[in-house]
Length: 229
Image (cartoon, rainbow, N blue to C red):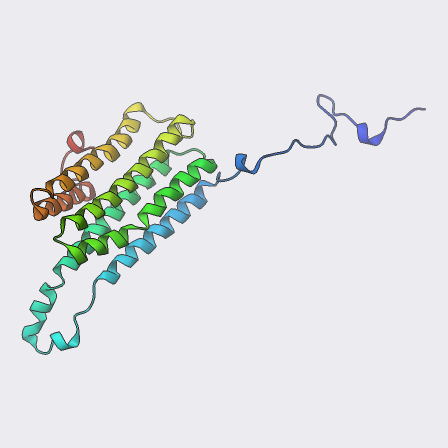
């Protein structure tokens, strides 16, 4: 009685059970864990938000000797406090934007993971650009450095969403929702650019406009149909 070799056993409807697997490229399986990307993002944002407070320096004891010195010492901190609020608002706004994107992401790949890493790279610069702004304000260049940082963050965030759109990585998203996500980022950047342009007329007016834009997107002060909030 003849017997077939054990190594040539076939399934009923398929190839041999011991058929060697085809080679798999690492790049085709890397970066697929959305939870890990989201956890990394939360960590970077939490650290960046914490670093902002380091710009608030307690007034030296030599400057606060009496009760009368407390008020002027605190007034001297107003630029740093303003920068802290502005930086915290910026980080909060972009965290919400990225979190909203994750809500609609169905899966990821290596390139999308690197899009988000690039986004976090420029997010991590916000404590520096905020400190630069508060240290060198009212120089126009200080505001422009901060604006450039916001521009890079927005560009990376928009790029990540567009990549996910092109490669069908999103859940079934209504066209109006998708347009709202893109409109928010684009219009936000237009308003940031307007604030930067205003600095060439008045640095103070440009800084105030920038703060108002941040307050709007954080608090929803203006209706969605006007500012994509």
